[in-house]
Length: 44
Image 1 (cartoon, rainbow, N blue to C red):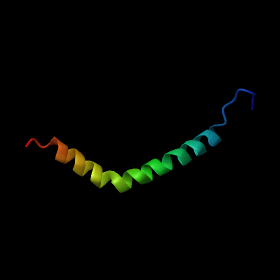
Image 2: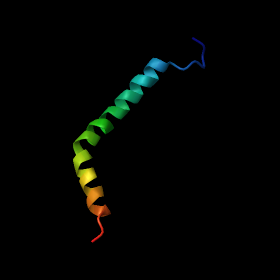
Image 3: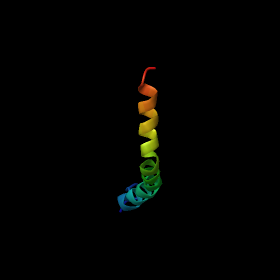
Image 4: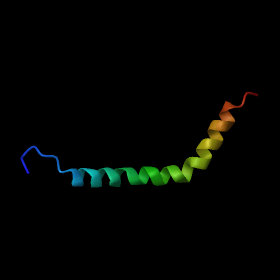
């Protein structure tokens, strides 16, 4: 590999590790998020 070559396997592994907690958190708060958005959209 050249000096300027991107080591994609390490970049993708780091991206996956950075994204995994966000995805897990989204699954836990998805119901509350949808409930809040739907409640805020109702005129009353």
